[in-house]
Amino acid sequence: MAHPVKGKPPRVGDNPVFRRVLLTFVLVLVGLMIVAPLVVIGVEAFSKGVAYFGAAIAHPDTRHAIMLTVITALIAVPINTAFGVAAAWAITKHDFPGKRLLIVIIEIPFSVSPIVAGVAYLFVFGLQGLFGHALQAMEIKILFALPGIVLASMFVTAPFVARELIPLMQAQGRDLEEAATSLGASGWRTFFSVTLPNIKWALLYGVVLCNSRVMGEFGAVSVVSGNIRGQTNTLPLHIELLYHDYNAAGSFAAASILAGLAIVTLVVKVALERQGAGRIQRPSALAGADTVTPEVKP
Image 1 (cartoon, rainbow, N blue to C red):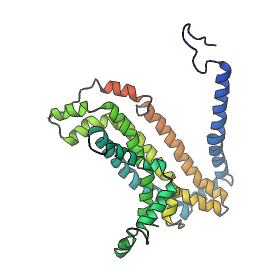
Image 2: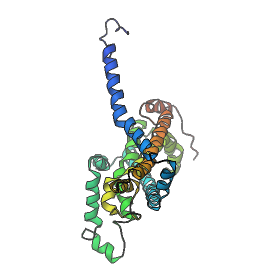
Image 3: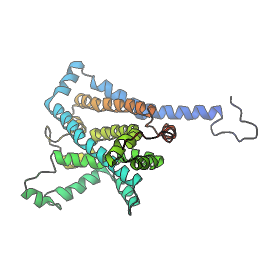
């Protein structure tokens, strides 16, 4: 048992009984809310054998849902990555009126229900919406098609990259960029030679989270996609349809793909944190960055 240092108050949790109770409470909740569902998904996915699992994954509707989910991620994630970097650069490296308002706007998707966002898109791009008649006249289909799915996915994941970069870039300050500029480096050269190396792990961390969220998005996509089987169903929507069709084994087989993605995301997250993208290791990375002189040639 650790004894408190004389003259100093005891730390919270020094009591062995308190530590055991706290640890037990945490482990029980983790087991019930995280481990148990993952185990159930794996067991139910193979409940009818490996052959049935393979057939369920190879079904045309499932393959189309997987393909549509991947295509959505390939479009939405790069755009949100570029947006996040641009927003973080503008907010942390420049002073302009409305900076705080911009930060609030970027964080709106965190406070708005995805279903509300999907309904909002209906009133903007729907037939009776703000741009509905104009889009119909130009024969451009946004809703119940890939563009609507991508837009909804981009909305719910817009803050992820920016939220990872803004605190880091604020802590780093502007000294290195100003030094590079004083040496004659252009804006792009400064970004790629000075800024990007200092934010690369946080950037990758935000991209991983953004990609995981895009592939698992349900609420907003369910509103704008129309839930057309084999056409506009992403993987989460397809899982729901299979479950409503009383095809539990098939739905769990499809769900195992998303569960596997979650595990891969967790592994990548831990790896990136060890490389300096995690919040715990960022101060040390920043401390090292303060002593590095940018090697930028005029």
